[in-house]
Image 1: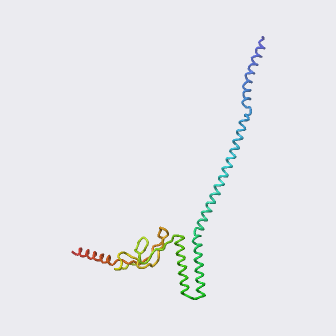
Image 2: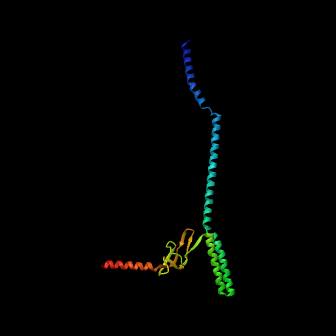
Image 3: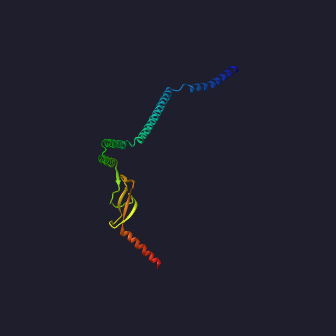
Length: 207
């Protein structure tokens, strides 16, 4: 073999060595497998579906909040409708009594009609709404439900007793809305004992 042929063989081997990495590079840059593409498409579809569900849930939550706010507004605005409906019946009775008195000019009939309306009205408030009237002449004085406007001594009572109700009080179930304003009888013996004790105290101080 001549020296020229040997050089040609060396050059050919170098060329083959240089071409081999390029072939590997081409193989690495080949298209992705079909399974990977399908998986990406599936993930994108699932992502879009989740976004749609989130938007739908947000819209439903907003509608629910609006509905609750509307219910709260209606409950506050119409909270007195039951008692006002009953009061409308009482007003009707007052109007009838007034019209009747205009025609008859009979005070006794008018007075009787007013008493009937008051009885109906008080009974309705008690039976339907639990409103109880407080304060009756002759019952024991109770500072939790009565407000004493005047005190009078009496030898006929053994404990503080209501002599007269100046203004009725009212209680709603277990809560006192307004105490009754009353005049109270105070036992005279208690007042005498108190004066005697005060006199004894003054005597002791003088000594």
